[in-house]
Length: 340
Image (cartoon, rainbow, N blue to C red; front, side):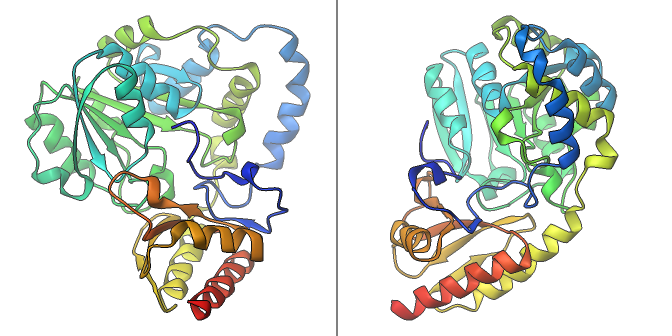
């Protein structure tokens, strides 16, 4: 799906007051990151390292892994296409509703897909070669504990589990599965730096896996897929991680209050989430109409969630911003409700 994701403000010639459509850190890119990248701009006159070697080593040290267990990618999305290319023509299972690029990556590599209910994953048996598990899940924030995921990985040793942890830093409900890599070879973890540090325009993610899997994935990975500025941003982040890491408790508190406010509006039912984003079920199937109303009348952007497999026009997704912007959205939704 090239089009149809969140943050599609480019489709509108509108000066948006707030963007609730993209699940990234609400305050935007750190000024320290921007300042550092400004100083590195002359480096674009040269090719980046083909495999982002220095950044690879920094990521490995951060997670206490071997460098052979790390692959830097052009956003998390490239990781999924890289992984599925190694499993050409085999079978995959995808929990829905979820991020659409798992499906698109599988189709590109001719994998046969079985869809399962994401919330029922612990009750399902797998005989597929790959299982995709977004944890916490996009778009509803549903998550599994490390113990639950370990049980699945252990019970189905012939299945490779792809755990997408793009939003793991946006919840306190569960933790990363990185420590499981010491015990299991049938686990691949995909991480993203674009959401937490608000640098989606740079496209920067990475894969963590066993050495054996890393060697296979490396063979299918194209050189220079990660640009110089993304590599420099990644290096700076891991050199200053604690200083740059946002205070997630603040945003999660904002989101909890926003969920409570939206849930009081007639015709809207919030599906509770422990992340910074959540689904809202509409009484009437008019997600696209609501999105256009908010965009054109109030200059606010939300995510029409109807194109997630398993959802329809009854669903929108909202990512919390600060209280002032959240108030703009609540007021706009209240006005919409009156018009219905």
